[in-house]
Each structure stands twice: as structure tokens, then as C-alpha cells.
Amino acid sequence: MNRLLLALSVAVTLAACTREPEPFEAARIKAGEFFKKNEFAAAATDYEKSLSLKPDQELVVWDRAAFSNMKANQFDRAAELLEKSIAHRPEQAAKSDTLRNIAGMYLQQAHDSDKAERYFQKAAELDPKDEQALSWLAEISSQRGGARVQTAEAQPEHLKIALERYGRVIALNPNKPDAFINKRIVLVKYLDYLARQKLSILADAEAQKKDKAAYASAQEQAADTQKRIDELKADLDETAKRLGEALKAAKK
Image 1 (cartoon, rainbow, N blue to C red):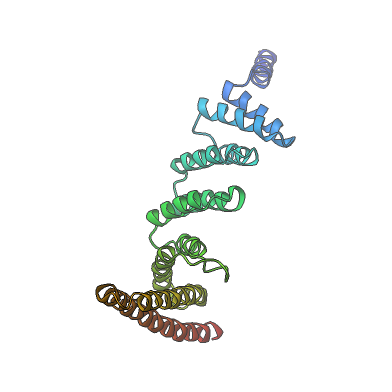
Image 2 (cartoon, rainbow, N blue to C red):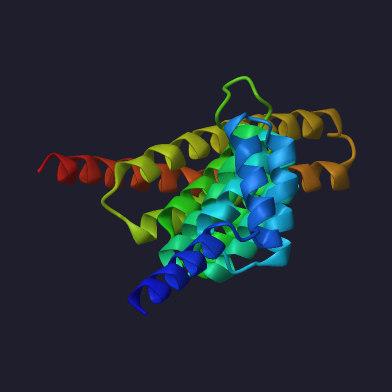
């Protein structure tokens, strides 16, 4: 009797070991083989097939599917998969990390700041205190405004947004020097732009001096520009002061 039970047990075990894998498993195994050989386009196809058959798999499958698409230069598909995977990540920190990773992929791999900005914004919406996301949003606006390249033409609409975003970063962490340093760079660029703009307005005013209405309008524009210059200079002084305080605090 015992021999019969033993034989049945062995038969069941062998049957379990030799069973055909489920379709989702087969696709995943095939994907893994392509992945090991760095054949990422093929790996992406089979990982996605596996996930379509069984979405509730381990997160490593979602991550590998996204990574394979990224390596195959299918950035939008990689982003779509990572964003879908957020539903399987219960902790908010993991959700935020995933959104920032998507944004980082667009910045570093695809060189697409527009799409990177979109995902940093999603991270900031998920967690308004996400300092990393807010800092990157400010940096993107700073670059668009021309603040990072001395010879670049200033884009005041983007410089204004950069200042607002650096303000949010500073509000979150007023003792961190980085945001003050970056904000100061934006302010200097903005002030240089406004100084040039004022000179141009005054030059136009002189050329139209015989036209009293045009001359008066130009003088008014110059006065408004000077008012904005004064505001930004005050902001620059305050930023420099707070930067000094933050640097002192960092040394303690």
C-alpha cells in the first residue's frame, strides 16, 4: 500500500514538473531569453504579450517591458507601460518615483523636455511637496528662458515661470542653497533682458520725439520696464541674502 502511494506521489510530481506553461508564462520566458541577448524590440513584444494575458504579474515584468521599449527607442510606449504599472505600486513614494523616472527617460534618452515636463507635473500633482519634481520643472523653464547659456536670447515668459517654480522649491526647503543659486541665475538673465529692452524703448522714443503721442507711450513703457527692473533687483538682493544664510546653515 505504501509503495502504491509513493508511486502515485512521484507520478503527480512528475506531471507538475512537465506541464506546459501557461500562455502568459511562455511569453514571459521567451521575452526573458530575448532580454538576455539584448534583443530588446523582440523582448518588448513578448513582455507586452505576457502582460496583456495576465496584468497582475510582478512589477519586474512591467519594468522590463518598459525598459525593453526604451532600449528599442519606443519611448512613448515605455512611458505608457510605466504609467500603467503605477496601479500595481501601492506606496505613494513608488508612484512618484515612477513618474519621475518617466520624465527622466524623456530628458536623458529622448531629449524631449516637453514630455519630461508633463510627467514632472504629474509627480508634483501627486505630491505637491515633491522637491525633486519641482526642481526639475524650474530647471526646464530656466533652460527654455536662456538662463543656462550666457549668449542665448532671453525668453522672458519662461524666465517668469522659472522664478515662480524656484519660489515653490524654496518654500519647501528654505535652507537648501541650490534653489537660491539657480534662482539668482534666472534673475540676472531677466534683468539683463529688461535693461536691453528699456534701452531699445528709449531709442525708439527719441526717434519718434516729434510724435507726442508715440513719445509719451514709449516713455510710459520705459517707466513700466524700470519698475519691473527695480522689483527684480530687490528680489535679487533678497535672494543673495537668503543664499548667504542658507550657506551658513549648511556649514553648521
